Length: 478
Image (tube, rainbow, N blue to C red; front, side, top):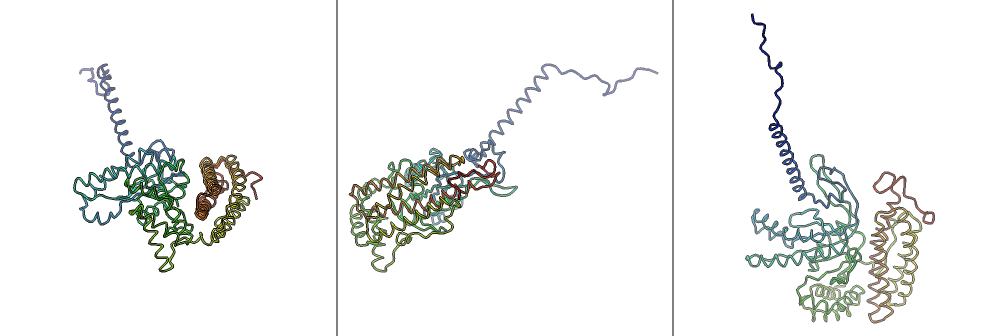
């Protein structure tokens, strides 16, 4: 019997890998890692087309994988809502495949323009675009103007190809919004929510009424750093669906054909006064001015619209207005902030607005001295207290809030200067002063200041608070 045992697999000594074999294995590992990294980068880029990287930055996350349901951040932004006019009948004339091809060809023209002006496209809604501009209102306005310029280029190509050119309407508004993620465990989406967003959609609808491709709100106008850079004129004061407080809207007509733009500029002083006299119910004077406008600019649709309204008023007594230009404002508990000095200042401001409204209604120009003297004292006192309060409490929107203060002071002092010079019609200047006061009360006193006080009163643990409630200086407590 042979005592030698045949070694089993377990008894065999491991075979040492050769240096060449180890190097091959290492090469494969490195290659697999590089391929995985490339796939991850491509996936991240692909997701970036669905969720903009700028949005991730706003949410303060580094990657799409870090986004969680319910992530949210509050920002002041200018919101853009654009839409193709008469898209439904145009869509009905095309097959589903042609619809997709058309929408993508149009959106591919607009998307880079928005990005160039530092805009973030929140979403495409069929042919509509919802975009956000974080830096300032100037980006939004210049971006909208550039979109309309690009549309002309796009339409030239459609005409060459035998297609009908399209028209779009763009509404712009500025305000506080919440940006975040909504949905469920298995499906979520990024979105922007807020009253300012809803109002923007209404402004886009108003472009159809006034045949004006670009309409901005009072909030966007007063947030512009260089409003004189653009061709802007007051259009109307409207009350939109679902809103209790009216607002002023403005037409930006930089993209009008050269001749129309030139004639609008030539008759803008006439148009501005005509609109004022219509709202002051001096219809005869409004008609006189509007006829001159139409002679100079026969294709000025808003001027023709106001002329039609004047004739309608003469025939039926129907007057298109929001009412508060005649009767003033009524104090509501909704205006309360919870801080007595601020609420007291707001009540006095409302009373001053109503006193000035009564002066305007009777044609008494002496109200100018009273209102501007009040505003000088009001802004020196309450603005200083507010600004001290914001800085002490580290209010995150201090800079924007102060900028609104500065803008308001600049605009009312310019009106005061014009009343002293005495070139403009006093009734027209009174109307413009009314608009400024009403806009300020509705957009800042009852919104911006309430936002500030909500921040001060929020409980510990909420976004932006440190520990407990933010300290309110002794001179600002009830």
